[in-house]
Amino acid sequence: QVQLVESGGRLVQAGGSLRLSCAASERTFSIYAMGWFRQAPGKAREFVAAINKSGGGTYYTDSVKGRFTISRDNTKNTVWLQMNSLQPEDTAVYYCAATLGSDRYRVYTSLVNYDYWGQGTQVTVSS
Image (cartoon, rainbow, N blue to C red; front, side):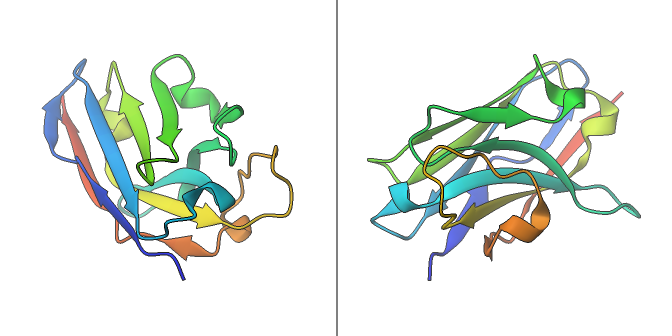
């Protein structure tokens, strides 16, 4: 069972940038497709970005397209979320998630696809 640990969240001003990291305990990291989700206070957890097992396929929710970039390095067992041009509405707890998934090339965008979750990291964007 893979363990996921997120880091990198903090308070930042609007327009700023952050890079979130998610380190996985599993050496065979490449067997997992990965995703980032977020949950703002009083709201449901929502999809942000996903990347397939090889890193060659990515997908983003519309509100972050052009601002956020998901990437991974399977040799380092790590997935990142680079967040630029941050806005107050990006304030949330950000969660990393992993799924074994049956399709090597697929990106998974639904919460129900994911089997493993990190504890989350808080991102706060001040106006």
